Length: 447
Image (tube, rainbow, N blue to C red; front, side, top):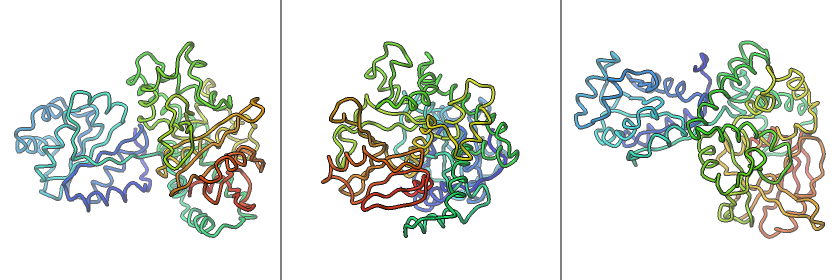
């Protein structure tokens, strides 16, 4: 069920750019996890930017409509039938046809090649990538297809939904001209923790705005998690994918240097799960940070496919997933997080939100760990970003502590490879000591 409210989403501008630059010579596929607002934004775009449109929802349409795409040798007949079935008149070069949930009719996706070559109308497809991949094994994927990935609402979109257009421009100016925020910091941090709790799924944001009640919010998140379980069942009917997903909070809480598959599925070996983990990553329900064995500019060149951490794609869902065994995620968790009285063992929420923000900004996630001199424990840098010919190291703290032994050791070990700056993301106000920047969590939005 799509939300009733129309939230402003940045992907709309990307869609406008596609329409203008493609001019009908490519279709647009919007990928993403379920319930992030794909159908809503496409319908809004169709209404605002075209004279007319037909939206074919392949989860609801008749078998007759589905069968139209089994044979695309006569496009005139297909267009005639669609106009009659939907009661819409299509106008050449001024109409859009939407294939919503296209994974349920893979032949419609295959037909894109012929439809685009015909050039009468524009085409947008939406779908859950899990199902798309599972249903396209025997079809020809059209090269005339541009792809955009849609993520949960980012922090700026969340503030827009709350009617706040001032906060992010203020923070952007601080990012460009760094300085402590002093009295404003406490409120900014509280506002950001609200985003961590509610998350960026449109249905959940709508539930928050309508009810101002965390129990209602929590219920909306549980419904989405149930849908994700269904999707994981499509990837892996044995249920292992769903179990791996459910164990993410416990795995992050363990402070291990990698996701320990064998602790979730006894006797499992990491090398046997590379493909399944890849499928989960492509579902966009999770963000995966791979270990980089030898940090350098091309971080992916030494990516370890068997050593990784898994984060939930939406931190609001993460909060509920962590306490899913209870009927309602304890109110005390919401109260403590909102008031910054979170138990230290829930600090991984901050790591999850930073992973979410970095991913939404187009960064692929990497981290690096290595043994200390005593070999009794490991140093670990939470995130590594490529910046030009250098690496930008980032450490995340769930507290006000400025300790950063791992970051210092990393910068000493790889001094020639890193940028002039390094970041410690924490919960206190902006500060700077030589090359070290101490940055409040809400500023990670700009990294």
